[in-house]
Structure formats: structure tokens, C-alpha cells
Image (cartoon, rainbow, N blue to C red; front, top):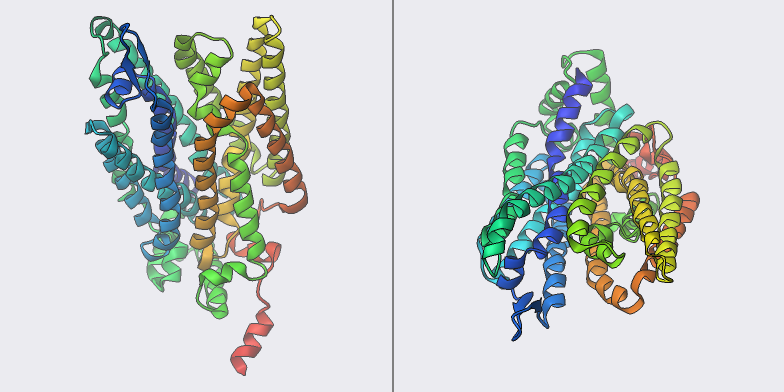
Length: 491
């Protein structure tokens, strides 16, 4: 029963991941909607009556993605402070509310400036949620299944992407008959698609009102009785049971030890035993973006079209298959993370993604010689790449980041690592169209090479954390000498 309620907590809070997934799957489709493109200056009719891109089309498309990611980056910084002050639960509430407000602004506006503002607000919410959801789950989950429960967030991200693809397909199909008679297409289709993202945001806020606070955060705030009570509810056991008292004792001793070291400051992130964790967390998040996953997710329709597939097929059926593969690929990762561990998944996942990128490039290159059917090989290995990512680097990086930092600086450490993720995400989203214009399909070679490098990094610098409690991470990564602290107190 205890694990069952833990999964309820994980799935409820991980709706924050679904919001991000819905956003990823949504925006590529919305950018391709005719009326949206005309309304915001991406397309216009030329003198011959043909619908063509405007001169600023690429800039506007890039800004639509960039403003969202800018908000995510700022949100990741804000939550590194807010998660300690308000707590994990309230921070998730703030993130869900911000995402819903941003989605509403995007759905109702006709101004590109206000649309950009709505993108930033939604991004702020996702930046908060992307850090705080895995942190909250890690602090409420039992050690034995902690990794699996944190991967629920990644599962929800992939479900959100698939849900967006299905919703947008239904909306577009329902509007096709209208679009055939209206020169500019139907306005409601993109407003409905954007407005739909408000629904899971509201659901997240509603459900989180009923979720418990993190026992570790409560203990750190000297709310001892509430910490025991929250722990007993989460584990579905009596407060006075031996299991609850033993776990609470471990949490309390961990908090007391960290207080003996002193108050958490940003400078502590540079201390021995902590700086190595920061560098690992930041580097893993940096590399996660350089897998190329968000290039494929953000520009899926354009990439499939560039392979030679018709745009209608690329934006509908191939995109849905892509999203479905993403969901299915997450499931083996959820199982294996507590079987073979985090480190092996990262190493072999990187190698699998590297090989996939190289083969996609090879098949596209060979298809240019006259055998267009080889594009099917490129498509297959894009899906193999998605499988490799969604079962390894997708969930594992978030799991690893959320469990390696001591409680007193956990929010700061995970905030810095999440900032690395979103800042790289923004950079890649901005420069990718430029790179693709310059070197065409050879951009896959860049990501194939970075995936190889990240596997080597994990072999050399990433220790295994499976089976370790959050309080035991100091033994793995290093900690302040307890005897030195005690002697300083006596003096």
C-alpha cells in the first residue's frame, strides 16, 4: 500500500512533466497551422495569390521557441531559491499556475508581443516544474524504487507529447473541411490547441493541494511532528511503527549533520565533496541537450519532410509514430534503472544514440545518390534514436541530478544543473536552423559525436547511485570531515 500511494504522489506531481511534453508536441504543429502563420506574420499571400513565407518567418519561428526556453531558464534559477523558502509542494503549485496563465495568454492574444510574453510565462512554469517535480518525488519515494518513481516524470513528458500530437491531429482533421472554403484557414484550430494546455495545468494545481509536503523539507524547517505525520501518510503506515521511526531517524540525523556544517550558501557549491556533484549534474544536463533530442522533437515535421516524405505524412502519421515510440521507449528505462543502475544506462544509451545519428546521416547521404527508398532507413534510425534516448538519457539524468545533493543545498544544486539544461536547450533551438541551413543533413554527425563523448564522460566520472539513500550520497561523493567539525565547535 505504501508504494501504491507513492506512485499516486509521483503521477500527480509528474503532471508537471506532461505539461512540458504537451508543449513540445504542440508548438511544432501550431507553427504549421495556416491561420496562425498568417496572424503572426509567418506567412502571407504574394501578388500571385500564393501562400509563402515572409522575410521574418524564420526569426518569428525561432523566437516562439526561444522565448519559451528563456522563461524555462529563468524559472530554473528562481526555483533554486523558491523551493527552499516555499517548499517543493508549493513551488509545484506556482509552476502549474504560471503554465496555465501563460497558455491562456497565448490562446487569446492576436499580438505577437503578447504571444511572446505568454511563452515566457509558460516557460517560467516549466522551468520551476522541471527541477521541482523530480526533487519532490526523490524526497518522498522509498530508496528501493526512487529511481523508478522519478522516471514517471519522463513517462509523463512522453505521454504529453503523444497527447498533443493526437489532439492536434483531431483538431486539424475537424477543420480541414472549413479550411477548404476559407482562404486563411480556421482561426479556432490554433486557439483551441493552445488553450488545451491550460487543462492539465489546472489539474496539476488541483491535485497538488491534496499531496503531502516533503518530510525532509518539513524536518529542515523544524516542523518535526508534521514531518513524521507526512512520512506516515506517504508510506501508509502508523507514525509509531518501527519502519516509520527508523526512516524518520535517518532523515533527522541527516538534517542535523548538515546543520552542523553550517547554513547553506551558494559558495558551498564550490567546496570539495560538492563541486564534483555540481560539475557532474551540470555536465549531464549539458550533454542531455546535445543528444539532439529536442531538435528532432521541435522540428520533427521539417526533418521528416527533408528526408523526402510529404509534409502531410510527416506532420501527421510520422509525427504520431515518433511520439508513440517515445512513450514506449520510456518503459524499459523505468524497469532497468533499478536493475542495472543509472551509470550503465547512460553509457550504453549514449553509444546507441551515437550510432543512430551516424546511420541516419549515412542513409540520407546514400538516398541523395538516387535511391530515395533509403530514406526509410534514415526514418527507422531516428526512431531507434528516440528509443535509446527515452529509455536512458531522458529519465536517468533527472533521476541522477535529484538524488546526489545534500538536503541543505539540494534546491541550489539541482537548480544550477537544470539551468544548464534549459540554457543549452535555448542555444540549440536558436542555432539549429542556422546549422541545418549551412550543412544540411550532416548536422546529425555533430550530435552523433557528442553522444559518443558523453558515454566516455560517464565511464570516467559518473559513479553508480542505485540503492543508496539520499543520506548515503555523502559517502559516495565525499563530505565534510565530521571530527573536524566537532573539534571546531569545541574550540
